[in-house]
Image 1 (cartoon, helix red, strand yellow):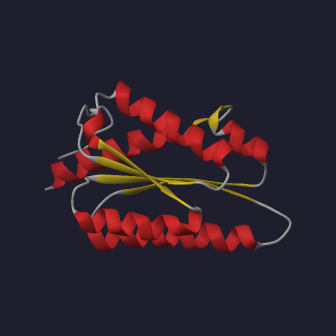
Image 2 (image 1 turned 180 degrees about the vertical axis):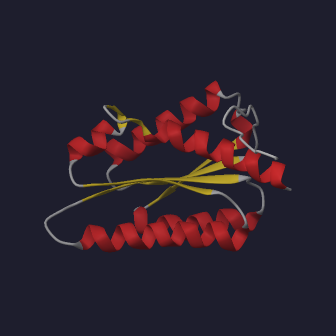
Length: 154
């Protein structure tokens, strides 16, 4: 039996981050955590590209262009969709999620969904270094593990 488990991979590669400017108090911390995790994992500055998007809805089109360039082995998407007074957050969350998945599958490229979809600012805070860890850091780990696993598969 062959088992592929790349959870301890030390692989580095060209990686891109697409970060929403909307809810910057959250998205900036997601990015900071992701960049710190890249540093801890041995990524060189030259392998890291950060692209800012106006909001979460624009993340998939930016991710698609990054995928088409063919330079990156993974893309990490950071955003924060926080419930408001209307149901708008549901449409945003769904479109961003489906858009990122579509880019990943169409380009055979990991697009890691580091977009927080939460009800409150407190829930967002819990996910950027609070009670639920740091999802920005976790997204980098997911990118490395996925790229390493895909390379092992062939």
